[in-house]
Image (cartoon, rainbow, N blue to C red; front, side, top):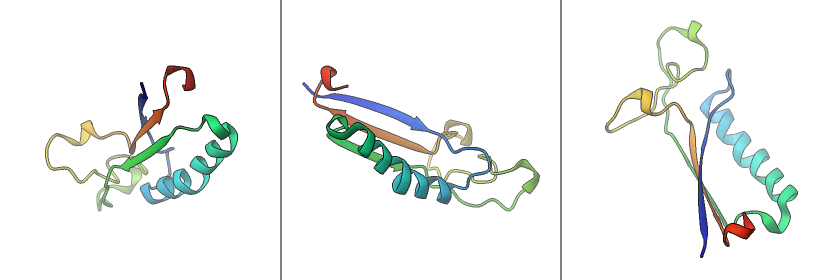
Length: 95
């Protein structure tokens, strides 16, 4: 039976959502594929929180307040993470 793992990822302070996505897709994932080889998950799906640029106070840095999430329901405080990753492994032994 397959094993599914969910991971929440957060931007490093001072990193824009665009920089975070580019780094994750172009550097982090290929590096993990290289390092883990055949142990890399069967499936690795990323979903990024859609964010907009705020015109508010720039002194707060590139925090959630500077890049609020585009949400249909809930509160901004519910979306402090920047990506949800679902990884599927063959089973517990492959994890």
